Amino acid sequence: MYLLNLRGGLIRATILLTVALAFALLILKIHSFPVPSLPCGFKSVTGLPCVFCGGTRSACAVLEGNFTHALYLNPLSIAALSLGFIAAILCVAEILLGQALVDWPRVWKGTRKIAPIILLFVAFYWVAHVHSALQKPKLELLDLNKPIAACFRSWIEPQHP
Image 1 (cartoon, rainbow, N blue to C red):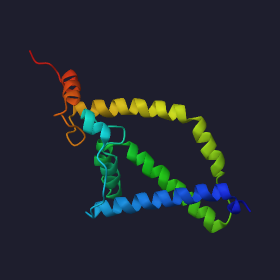
Image 2 (cartoon, one colour; image 1 turned 180 degrees about the horizontal axis):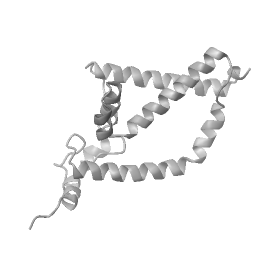
Image 3 (cartoon, rainbow, N blue to C red; image 1 turned 135 degrees about the vertical axis):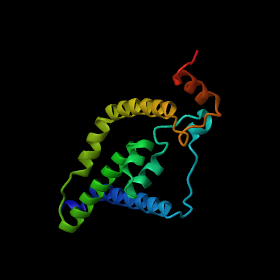
Image 4 (cartoon, rainbow, N blue to C red; image 1 turned 30 degrees about the vertical axis):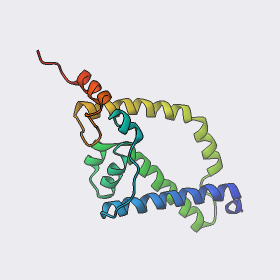
């Protein structure tokens, strides 16, 4: 039986535990429970948002039904939540049905093969994310007191004669 396959079972268990933990932490954060979080090292040094900056607040906005604010903060969180939710549903369905619906080891292997394309997409997204944060400016994602962020902001800000 496929479900007894150790590798598939470990991947399935990891997906379920990760998604459950992420959703639990987000729900606690929504209800103002003091969930510990680490400051972004990249933003602390440069004042600019990293790829993930605004992701937690964006995910909380999605769970509260505020999709506009979620898109404003970090649209990547919507994709991450959607993928996690779909993967968790598939894993639960496999457990309930007692049969595999997805060949998880093969999916994992395929994901590793397209990783360079995913990384390239994320790099382009990050440049757009930084540009958007500087252009608006999205002060919740920036620290304009840092020289690097202030310098980038001055490049984007229109010069008045």
